[in-house]
Length: 411
Image 1 (cartoon, rainbow, N blue to C red):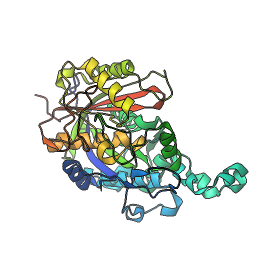
Image 2 (cartoon, helix red, strand yellow; image 1 turned 180 degrees about the vertical axis):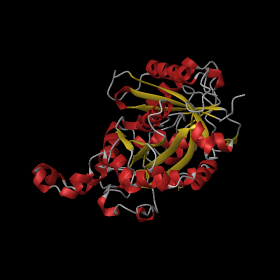
Image 3 (cartoon, rainbow, N blue to C red; image 1 turned 90 degrees about the vertical axis):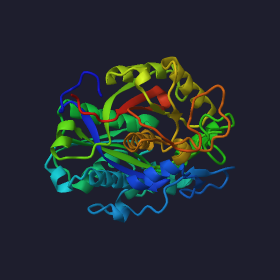
Image 4 (cartoon, rainbow, N blue to C red; image 1 turned 180 degrees about the horizontal axis):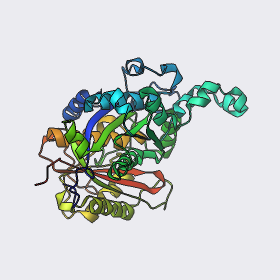
């Protein structure tokens, strides 16, 4: 797969996965959760929800940062950085890579996020914020920098020859990070890439979506005619990417191949998605990957469960596909993890390819006729998947579409 690209240095593969999510931490538990159609929805505990009529979300529970931090002190880094570090350590272990060996290679660490460490600011009162910098705990101010997510991974792993990127393109940031890693590997700038996204539930973002009227009272129901909105989620998805030559040389297991991606930004509206722009982005991704719409076996949709997103996204899909393939939303299970969302979905796509199944869209009762796609309702489905498309949309018109494929050796 991958168009005209036939050089093992140019081809980029996924050899490791690290996951922190509300339905499972670690690739095995996360994969089992996807197969089972597990729901991560529960009452939010991250902040005081007094005054909100409803406050269900998809928080990560049972996460112990000390299990993953060896060099960093848990109290010295925020929750999103803890998630990113845990995901990175898991991904390296899953890839069969020794940290000491990775330290001797040229590495890219690219992490997407929407909120960075603004969860730390939930500890401040309105009066403290009004009083200005003198009221801020310097430790909180130091941790709040979003760049801490990627640099935290570097410091924890002790990487020496490394390029570090934190990408803040909101809810599409995870796919942006994976795309940046794909480019860096294809051009030979790095040997190994740790890429993905991380975010932690915080009051700021929950309140913003709540005031938009887009927080669901109980559950996320993408593509359902009675859908009422999204649920806030959190976690991290981190992928190890390397050249096919590198993976072959060390006999690595290959989950999937990165075929290509497309991105654009219409910037037409601060929050409303643009159907035509997303359709253009899908076509860009197909061209970059060297595939046709009929080659796609599964679409992992952005699928937030809001009335507007689902209709616009399915409309864009229909503009490109004469006969759309099954189209699912893992947000029905894990909620909307913001900057980690498309990275977690990319992990799900890689697992779907490797394990030959389609994750379900849970909480589904009646398909909205304005969507009208096969969303694989409620139960996973066995399937041999050769090409999977992962959509990501974000505020400010940021769209990224990632294409993954089953790895096949060329003859």
